[in-house]
Length: 251
Length: 251
DNA sequence: CGCCCGGTTGACTTGGATCAAAGACCGTGG
DNA sequence: CCACGGTCTTTGATCCAAGTCAACCGGGCG
Image 1 (tube, protein in one colour):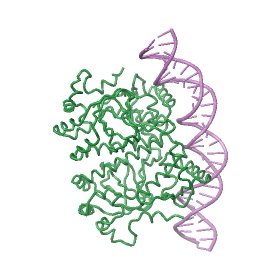
Image 2 (cartoon, each protein chain N blue to C red):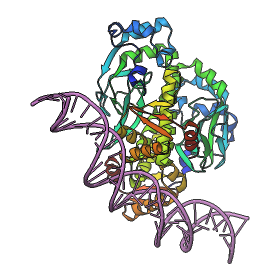
Image 3 (cartoon, chains in turn red, orange, yellow, purple):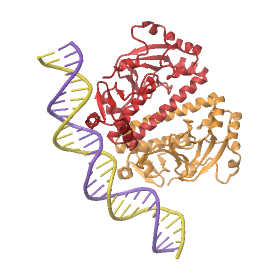
Image 4 (cartoon, helix red, strand yellow):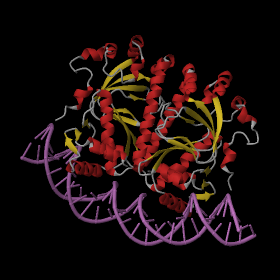
């Protein structure tokens, strides 16, 4: 058994509406502060930024941004999972990334969103009006530095993802994805576990790693049959971590 | 016939060695200043940065950085084409990008290079010691802003590339690549032409768009047979630009 | 209970990979 | 000036991994 992903994600229990009404209070002792861009700010600055922020909840499937549409907000994900994707004219979808708690949506600061974003599961985020955030950013070079670091990290992640999509076989794609999600969860939660939460559907995974749902399902089944993973509700357990790492490294 | 790509790329004729010996002089009236990160600097700042720079030439195939190795220089490409790639354990190669004049190599500012980089053709670059550049950068928030913009742009490019690798058919990949290179050359050269220089080999193109050399060659041949492109030395001419754009948009 | 939706599985097809051979295009040296 | 060897490109024949299409399963919920 694994804990429902929310246990990992909610930084305040839902029975504390105070946190929602007074964001600044929540900001000060936010679990995610060290992993999010807020970590670049000292207390006074964070209090100021908190004035600009508004916490919002998003139901599963609720849309945050639409590709090409103007959007005047940027987000700091607090809880849940957001998927970032491109919708192709023929209806297919390429997911370019999953945003987890601590991730920033709107790095490009463009007037128009380069991608669609919606919530995979019920999620929460700090929202900032882009103009206000930009103005604040212009006064805080160390925040810009942090944002730059985030952009570079996203860029590098995208480039590595690209290597995967360009070259890897189905099994390697799936295993890389599992290791990738494991790494990302452990970066948030601190401790790393062989149980990887997968809040997204099989279709989402397929659209992320460039396969079809059938192939993802088949591959997972085969991996479980070979006792390399165990499929659990909302996730998988990696039974042979060294072997999996070797498969991914080996091509 | 098309001009050899060097005509487009060299911002100073090779018979002016003065530019090589006195970089600062060259920097002041560098054609690439507006398109490169130097565009963020006023004359005095540029003069200061020029002190830190050293112009270097790279022969075709000469290596600039090796994936995982430490590298204490960053580069501003002046002329030629640099390929950025990941080498897989089985010897295959995924090219994550081509750097053209005005592009910056080393955005991540990490001690160790995330990718290999080498010259596709004879190239030139401004080199900066990373530490010195970092120190300069720390004093110039507008340069950081410019660098951030470049990182965001790279990130967005990588994400779009990713959509292509995840979903597109061979013909769409090739056509997207041609349009992409056309757009990039025109961003440098100012004017856009239906003739697209391709300094890289077929193998490079294949490794960039996630196909094999045979498929790239076949696809190009088929496109030429259908009178949609014309293959010329070191490039192609797009005969049916609107049709090509429609094919790419249509999936 | 029965519907619905997500996931799994099977049978068949196919686009692009692989393997292999033959051109084309150099620069080099006789 | 041409013959030679190397590299890059094109082309053909065959194969296979993953896609497609479709049936089926199973859990949650009205």
